[in-house]
Length: 499
Image (cartoon, rainbow, N blue to C red; front, side, top):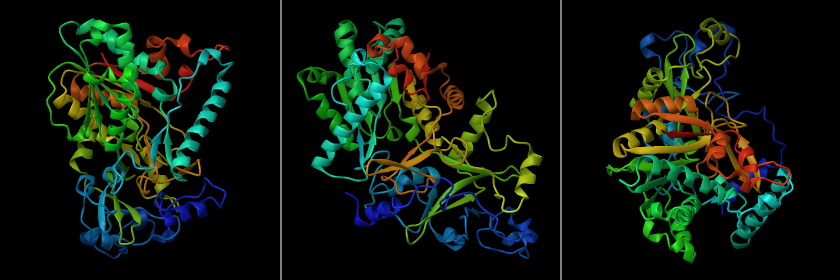
């Protein structure tokens, strides 16, 4: 259960009707000085220096401003140490008097490891849905809602929790049909290029409840025994609790226990992987890119200089956003690789004409920097791991190419929580980890280009529906009206695969 302070906070929140126009303390920098000081206010000096200061005394860090009056945290920013998420991983209390890059802040702070916490549960609907017996898709919505309520009622009967984060995935909603589609893709591509010279080795990252693993192995055992005899399934799971849950599901029934000799569950972060895998393998990363931490970058509208976001945590545990022109090596490398790899234009804060940007920045109360763009630096690190440690891999990944209700910015995330079974979106990524989900969309055009540049492999990007039309038996999920929830749901998702 949450602490009384957190519970009281959410109760106060729900006493008022939500208003999307209200912005939190991490909104865009706002000019609050008079028009006479417009030139000096173009850069929000974090030390509050006035126009009489010489250039050598000017601070090079921009503090993110509030909608009202900013608190000057420049002194704290100068003296607080820079830390990383890895350095804080062993701590049992949330840190104070530190600063960290945005990606390290999103990656998580103690005592709740990312991307899962004790608050998060993955929804399981129980018995598979009988889609052929349903009248139409609205009936599926109704039945799903009933099972959703029953599932959470059962959880509350054991341990009530008003702030439980409940996730659902296509693997669970469309079990076993979604997993069988993945299995057909794997078996077909394995037989085309690797059989019988190599084993079918499958790595899955972020396997959740382990449902996809069981569905894939069940299908291969039932429909291609000769391939099943040569199959190895390895799960890479960062969460100790989920690794234990996957192991328990593997032992839950006689049918599942039959796969035990085929399965290895490795409780480790993929970013800590140090084993060289020379054998050809398939690497599954389904609905995991959206949890990878991103860096925040803003640009000076006049010089077009990039500035990297840093989060300051003060003595009271409050969060403040600063931007500095000193990019760390990972963010700098991402920008270089993206510029070199992408042959077509991609969304960027500087795409608007320079004159318009400059005119806009001179308007009263205009922001002194561009809107932020969130760059997937952790995703690039993941591709580095694949290239270095899994050189013969074939990647199959699926994730959201767009999300509703995102915060301000390019490639910006959805930041939300649940309280009393209601979703509560917020407008800032500066939130307590473990109590909020931060989900990023994936720009598959940019992602594909960067993946190709790093690994040297060829790829194909399909819509979620196109992939399932190729590999699923769509008749199994078609309702009597002809509607197909398997194809219609997740219309905002895409699939990238190595060819």
